Image 1 (spheres, rainbow, N blue to C red):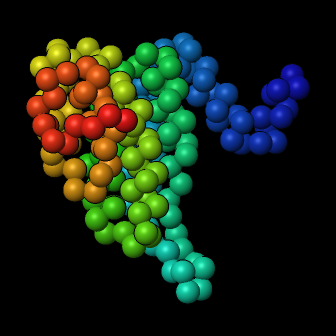
Image 2: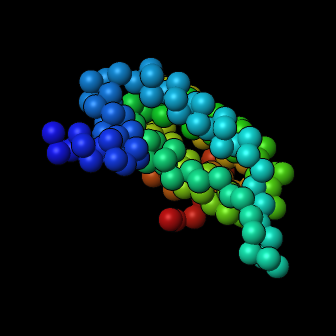
Length: 168
């Protein structure tokens, strides 16, 4: 009862509690719909910063990152790849148009690190896992998937990206 009252006062706690319960009961579809909507909303926001007058607008990806981590912890790796692919595509477009000194790219990249870690755990066959990583890594103009190098080295030791492979 105390937790219920606290959740009513603090909407973030209520949302987190509800999401945890849904993941625990494997009710992933509603969470995925909500997260897709949130990703599309965040990536459509302009990202900018004016250091002269200390103004700006940088989307907050912290909830997306927490949800990605929760999906990973609950073992929903395939769903995480689907959501991560959406964030990568839409986030790349946002970063290309942003003027925020790389803040959005950093935040999106941190979310995508969780997705990259999920690739080897997904149900994709190993060749498709490798292809998923390589295709996105090679077309990543903004370094959003820099963490993929570590996964390639760790899980695919022959490392087809050659000189790009460095230890994390």
